Amino acid sequence: MDYVIRPGDTLSKIASRNGVTVRDIVSANPQITNPNAISIGQRISLPTNAGGDTGGGGSGGGGTSSANPASNTRPTTSEGNGAVSSNPPLTSPNSDWTLPGEGLALKLVPSDFDAAARELGCESAAVRAVAEVESGGRSGFDAQKRPKILFEVHKFRKHTARRYDQTHPHLSAPYDSPRRRESYRKDQWAVLREAFALDPEAAAKSCSWGMFQVMGENYEMCGWRSVRTFVEDMFVSEAQHMRAFLGFCRDKRLTRHLITKNWAAFALGYNGEDYASNQYHTKMAEAYRRYARRS
Image (tube, rainbow, N blue to C red):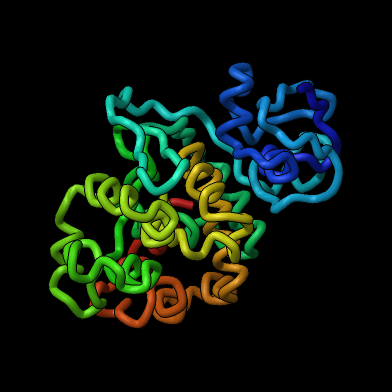
């Protein structure tokens, strides 16, 4: 089924209206090399499982059609260069949901941080500082084009109502358990694969995703209708990671702390009560000073 891009359209909005993901649309349209650079009048193909609803609004984010003034304030991407993945998809005998072994892994470019900063009303250096600390100073994707993740055993315990405390204590444990730190030292995709086989949605909600490490459980506040579409979009581009970050900051009212560079207050809201023990606030402050000197 064909669709013609209209003013104000984004791939995320089109995907949301038609019951598919951004990845589905990009896969059906190999001519789209940048999901965040679509134009009014451009004709695209919708996946065969699309619902066909071409009206109404969506959840926002993603690329904005070029005639919309908002296109100047939305993150854009360029293509990533990760190595080809040989990882098998993530599957579960308990669900029809499958996660790919790799994504499109489209990268942000420097001007995207400036656009995000304008949207938040803060300095670009502040956005860059958060990205650096959360991603470890690297891309939002690994070399195999998978979004960077961190699995939280206490979140999996919460989202599975402790069903796996006895049978899988390495996946389901309290926050103060030593198993939480032990889990961090493991291959995170191997951990997620095992948890996904047990309960895909709980596993997805229990991971932080991408360049800004936004938890899957926060999908709704960030602008997605389901954790499935949230996670599938995390495979597409760092622009989707940025979209999650912007949504989280707005929902949690953290923008004010980015504007004033109150890094302790920002880290408390973004990283939680243990932020000081991990020195998130001091790391962000130092990263900000570095980026601010360059601007």
